[in-house]
Length: 214
Length: 185
Image (cartoon, rainbow over all chains, first blue to last red; front, side, top):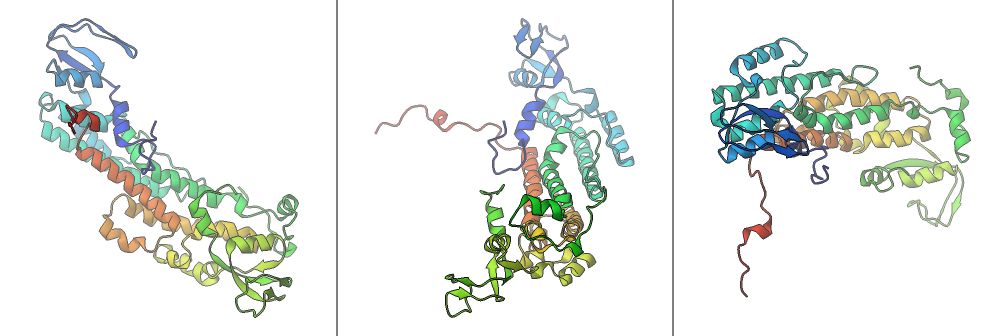
């Protein structure tokens, strides 16, 4: 799937993550009459003027571009709930669960295509940017702590899709390096080596030391 | 042989190590100080790792620990790992260390490399997602190749994310679609 962005070591490019986010459902208020749409991903509609209905984000944007509907911003994208989320993000080290998995992408798509449907769009936008920055900083601080643990593991709760995607190449490589240097193969067992490789010089028995205890 | 086609692995094996010949070898010109084409027993020669490795497993030579893993470097890394210039000592410090550890019989190498990487990892992490390129360029010269890869992975994913956020052309038009009619020539 992600073969096109070869210079980028990340598995998915940001555009691909955005593409996946377009499958999230969102409420629209159509202003036209239309038969139900029977798609592989599900049936949507029928559409009547001023009757709220749920469609995937990509369909909502396509209709919006043609002037056939107004998009209702999701409930978390209101100023009050965003302010509450931002406060709780700043207070605790745990990431909050309120935001949907694709919040970065959904908010960007709505800002691009449905600005006039979002009340107080500037305020909402800056709040979401603040939340994202706080959360990214949180991810970095928790990555700092994981090299201390013996198991070389890190536990971060409730990461969103875009946040995972941004840190994935770095974390993947770092974990690989930790695994490689921490593996007991580097501290070889002399008996096993002389058996497996007949050219191998038998190691000096004086230096023999048992394997690291786990 | 797992990384046979990995260019970094190949370059890492080019590192020079000094070996002591346990046997006299005839007909090879690998000792530049010798007048004839043979190497006497007990002579010290500097060879690339890939050659030294092959000779070592045939018990022709014994390998010495390269200077980048000596006691002085270990002390420096223990004192302040992030400020040690590992690139000038050995650009593939970790890779080379893993390769050479079983040959010189150094049992502490694994834990030494791990602790060095742990301490330097924090510095890479702190710089990778935040600092601008200009601010980090001085720091970059200290990193080994492996750490640079790590740093660049973080930088490029962050840059790709920022580029996506700022926007730009959403759809790229195929070149054939732009022309309405073919030029008549």
